[in-house]
Length: 327
Image (tube, rainbow, N blue to C red):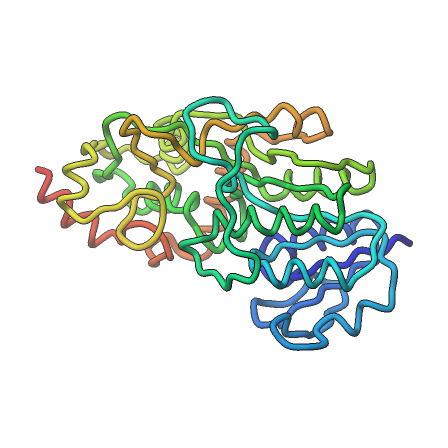
């Protein structure tokens, strides 16, 4: 039985990776603090704080068939890669590592400037931290698989950026709903279930190098239309341009008082929407229709309650107040 060590494994992507590997007959161990949730049923949890000395002592005396690393703290990534022996090494990076552009971004496109080697980073330097982690991973494992993931969506997503739209559409019903207007960058999403299925297959098949793990580009408006159609929302679509939304303190992309995943096009480069999926597909990725993902996410949102507040987006009360201002 092949052995897989996941450095993480209690948060969403790591847990789904563990679940997929277990289903294929792998023996899975997760090294984590254990504060982000439980491991997938059947996986073993090794509790460790990666910021403390000796964090890898319990797993460094084994040669693993594969290791999957998900951290974006450079020192953690570098020290783990040096301490743990494995036949195959995978680093889950991000398309955010690329320098913003409006051109098609293949895997050989320029990256951002990395943070310093021992930087302790927060979310404001996530992009540059991923670049540093890639560099350190390649220094110790030249044949590593670098998974440059795009926007990951699907059931269980803790960010709820994608889930906001079917939830909001279901909550609005036959009442009005705010959407962004004006030019906007395209959007690419990948269902977590398709991503981890490809990831485990890529490990088994010996895929190396960088791969953009992204879905096909689509118009943001088409994603919103699909959310409304899935939720059978028949209310008015109230579009507002970026400057009017800014006046109402409604933000793009993520977080409270946002219209999640919306990226207005002001003529400058973008960090998402232009990434080539050619190598992802060539190395075996199979992507389900977006309508299936939308349907499954809406079902989860209905179970949780469509009138609840999520970590991203407008509350219904905030949206109703904004609609009055836009009337």
